[in-house]
Image 1 (cartoon, each protein chain N blue to C red):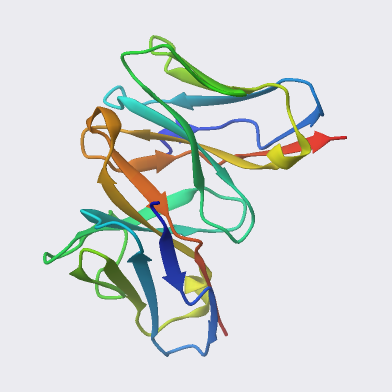
Image 2: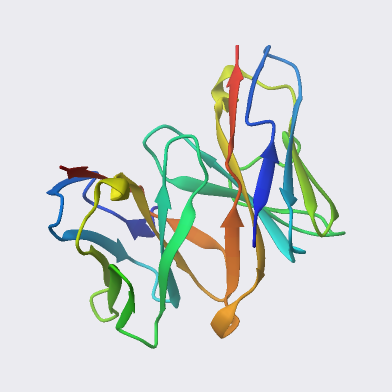
Length: 111
Length: 118
């Protein structure tokens, strides 16, 4: 069963606007959450993470928000740039350090 | 730092043959290495976790006799797909982990290996 879900398979956004990617999880034992960016035929690259003791983490244009009660997290990219076009994976981990991935959201940034 | 390589990047083989994929952490010693597979437009699915010098731990539904994992050193893990069949065709990705900030073991991913079984 899929413990991490990304319900939007794709997102199209205009350059300069905000991209908002959503992720839901079901396992209450998850305590660390990560976002990865992936290009075709390449491995994922780490973007940003958040611990369950926080509700927000910001790194440059990327901000991750965590709502533990709703078991929901989101990634905000602002402003969106053409180079941000990629597949974004949400991942979650518990104390065993294994990562459970969502199915990914393909982001297309239009010029 | 934290570069992980995989070799080969792609391989085509005949049904029934075995294929070995190498995963190396180039500039750090990895406490643990993970193997994932990804089908088109789907998520990365964890296959197994391996620690240097010990047997790999396989996820439910993954055949350990089919997907042999050897973790010979802190910088090298290999995945051998034995008697490959067309349904084994997939994108295989490894990751290597090391202790990171806040006690979390960061995972660094290799570029992946595309396996096509004819």
